[in-house]
Image 1 (cartoon, rainbow, N blue to C red):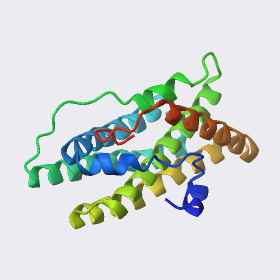
Image 2 (cartoon, one colour):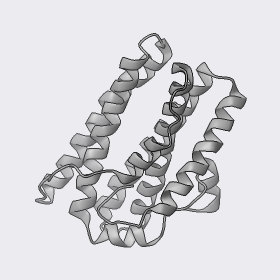
Image 3 (spheres, rainbow, N blue to C red):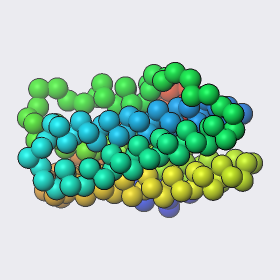
Image 4 (tube, helix red, strand yellow):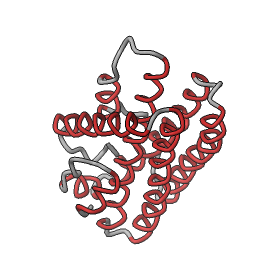
Amino acid sequence: MSTTENAILGLKLPTDPRWVNLAAISLQDILTDHAFCEQKAATQCISLIQLYPDKIELVNALGPIVTEEWGHFRMVWAEMQKRGFSLGRQRKDEYVNLLVQQEPKGVSPETKLLNKLMMCALIEARSCERFRLLSENLEDEALKKFYYKFMVSEAGHYRLFIELAEIYFPLEKVRDAWQQWLRIEAQVLEQLTPRGDRMH
């Protein structure tokens, strides 16, 4: 990913180039992890709707995303079946777990919402970056096109979570929170060794 593209997403640390090479030789593993990531994304949106049913704009925006993310799971699973891959078991997502550990405790429900929206935007932005790397660097032409579509989708989701935050919070507060989470995410990535069997 270029410097300009990283600037658009805001990410402070690019993905280690070794990750793409590892993913290329672990296609079944990376597709399995991707499938479960789509499930988790749908579940996270449902959770936000359940936690904040009074936020009408949030409910209206995330309802369709639940359907879209589950549709993405079905797309990944269909791709796996075409290749004769089994789904396997869900894997621990160290990246997301480390981010969640950084979520401030004992804050107001409103501040908790802001942090959750920032984390969701961050995960979507990082997924967008990783999908772009796969779309540009895999040798498998079908998978390159497959991941290009996902890259476009994740970019839209990243913006959606930022825009939802801007509905409920002052713009300056959203910008400050976003920069804080970007710094946290860079620190998290520095703790992780690149793994070709994980999307994050």
